[in-house]
Image 1: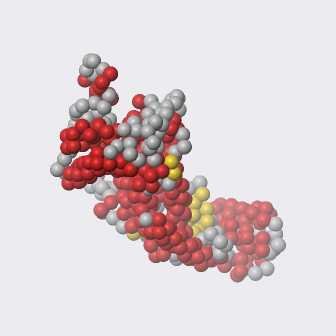
Image 2: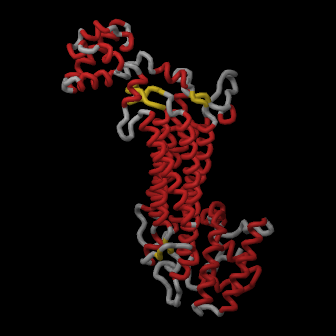
Amino acid sequence: MRKLWGGRFEGQTDALIERLNNSLTFDARLWRHDIQGSLAHAAMLGATGILPQEEADQIVAGLRALQEDLESGAEELPADAEDVHTAVEGLLRERIGAVAGKLHTARSRNDQVATDVRLYLREECDALDAEIAAFQETLLALADREMETVLPGYTHLQHAQPIVLAHHLLAYFWMLDRDRERLTDARKRINRLPLGAGALAGTGFPIDRKRVAAELGFEEVLENSLDAVSDRDFIAEFLAVASILMMHLSRLAEEIILWNSPEFGFIALDDSVTTGSSIMPQKKNPDVAELARGKTGRVYGDLMAILTLMKGLPLAYNKDMQEDKEPLFDAVDTLRLVLPALQRTLATARFRADRMAAATTGDFSTATDLADYLVRRGLPFREAHEVVGRIVRHCIQSGITLESLDGPTLAGFSPLLGEDVCAALSVLGVRSSVTTRRSQGGTSPEAVRIQWQQAQSRLRARADQKAAAS
């Protein structure tokens, strides 16, 4: 296909260099956004008189027809094109002739590609936000169902204090909610128009960038032409958001893997989201969770690739920046695959309340409740901590549990425990421990129900905001 820059050259590009230089293999996915930007640019060229209106109309009509044929499959991008921009303009030239060459008036591939990527990424931000919202809906539904299910809460992967499962699930709801906040915030900076910056210095034609921005739905126009074409911080920011999101998903995936093991047995995964072993007939592997965990490193790598790519580039555009798209596309594709797969894994899982409850028996997780009881009786917390520590040591040495202590033994550790032994013993129950933690954000079913309602309100408010914005 005819190159957009061949006039300066007498010789042909070496075939190996053609392969190195070619980006159509990965930037072909931008053809819709390339046409979208070109439609707005062509309309502006006609409205400002830079092109005769009839020529601008001819270009617009040609682009719309090309768009329809590419959508239907009646037309395909030529495989020998250097990039998506060359491919689209070449196909347009075949349809409307030399006037297609006027489309590139007052723009460069530098501001064109920056516009294409921003249009693409803005669209993907919206799609990812919808995927995260669906995940949050699943977490809310599961939390509503598991409001009374008790399990050990962990610190250092050691039994710490008992909690309810709904509380645990809602922790991920709020992590994902902050991910949506970050994504929304990043989208604001993505949604700024670079088109009109030209190669680096702007243009001498009387273009109307604000008109183009309005046509394409950009909230602002980038103020500096050098900055507009030469920075990819909006990609780096998106990848940072994506990395944090994947970190959250990986943590959840790790817990699914642990809970699915025989040692925990807290969760049973559905056949539809698990695989078997080629040699061990009994195996049922949590592959979705493992792949989510593994692909997190891949997205981290995409972020590092962009940061490394950009760290030493002088202004303005450099060909190195062609390498910005593959890490970006990889991260987007990974998220668009992992999010629904992990959501489906969780939605189809069966939580085993019996195993969770059994795990809280004899694990000393109500020791803090006993210390708090002593504090309410007037003992400073540090002294209460020491007393209960001795009680726990006695139980371990005697091979008994806190729950099995009798009144006289318990009272022997502190006169305060002997004042009302029945009351002291009552705080050692797991259900009692969970129920008393009614502080805002606490794990009592009462507090978790309030939190659940807050989460539901947050989800609905976001949905209403999106509906209003569209």
